[in-house]
Amino acid sequence: MTTDTHTSGRERGYRRGPRVPEGARGERLLAGWLATGRPAELPDHLARYGGIPAFPARGGEHPLIDAVARAGLTGRGGAGFPTATKLRAVARGKRPERVVVANGMESEPAAAKDKALLRLAPHLVLDGIVLAAQAVGASEAHLCVARDRSGLDRDLREMIAERRYNGFDPIDIQVRTPPHHYVSSEASALANWLGGGDAKPTTTPPRTAERGVTGLPTLVDNVETLAHLALIARYGPDWFRSRGTAENPGTTLVTLAGALPAPGVYEVAFGTPLREILSLGGAPRDAQAVLVGGYFGTWLPANHAAALDYSGPGLAAAGASPGAGVLAALPSTSCGLAETARVLEFLAAHSARQCGPCRFGLPATARDFAQLAFERCDRAAWERLERHVELLSGRGACKHPDGAAQLAGSALRAFAPDVRRHLRTGPCPAALNAPPLLPTPAAEIGDGDWR
Image (cartoon, rainbow, N blue to C red; front, side, top):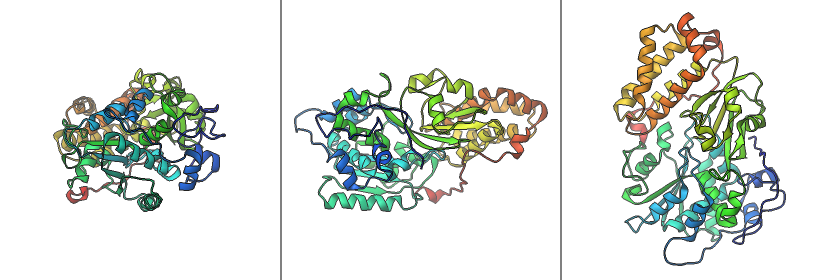
């Protein structure tokens, strides 16, 4: 796994915990890995960060929630929602029992950041689960990872047992392995599965913070978010804000993928120019486009993407967002329409098939896009494709159709010259001959495969 960072400078200490060790150079989540070259076992973790910080008992809101709010931590799972808002909603839940769910499913095929974090710095995530549970008053905690992660669930259970043996965790963390479908990592899908149902998204409202696992107020946070929370608890809001931007403080993990000499997971500060981030992976000079945010993301021409800052506001001006933390470079030898067609086919196969847009609209859009990419596409088929893309957004029971529509629409804009050529002369040689660049695992999902 390739890891790196562009930041530098010694981090400041915070009175709640030990000082950040020498040599951290600005890395945060990956500091231990970059300093030692090996995953952090419990003794390594304790030597670097000390034990879980204690907060004084007092009435009212837990002090960690206020610290997270002042730090400006936002979710790293895709939506970028303010973490303190979710913590407050669960802590103020009407039921006395509460649940914490750490989401490490990472159903995005092009992403690897959550898996890397759980392999390289697992105890930061486990610390974050414990601290989040204390902050919201939860007595139940689950860490969800995919079933096909090469024994990751077993390794995590052994780490949790070691921590329990040494008396570190006041709450029992259960490692759970839901079905690994694209939509199964959605918050309501995890809550539904943990409560005994299918791993399919449920309609909102109510949100999981109000009614989640077995109807209890439930905090569902990405594992990277919880690892940042564990560091904020130690070093404080000012330390966290010393990296990133005022609107998007902190660092974040990014998966660099596609046609890069050094793909992998990198830690960068929000606000870093995309040009600098892509250069960490050795971005090719002939890249024609960049997929920003993953399969619910946005295709941008390479020269346009390179000029943007990697942050919510910095990408929003181009109609993009950090999303699942993926930046995939498309070389000039590939066809962006063909890549998009294959991803849309994948998304259609991985839908929960609970509503019309997923059962009919998304498969129809995928077929239309495949015709544009790989066959002769007449004017009637082109107009049907435009209509289907427009009708997908905002009509589904969950956000799955919206994400597919975002990807498809951005491809039609970013590859507009290719669209015109395909309509005029048929598929280009790259569409027919270039090997697929983005991973699209095969899916044959039966009705019983959601448990």
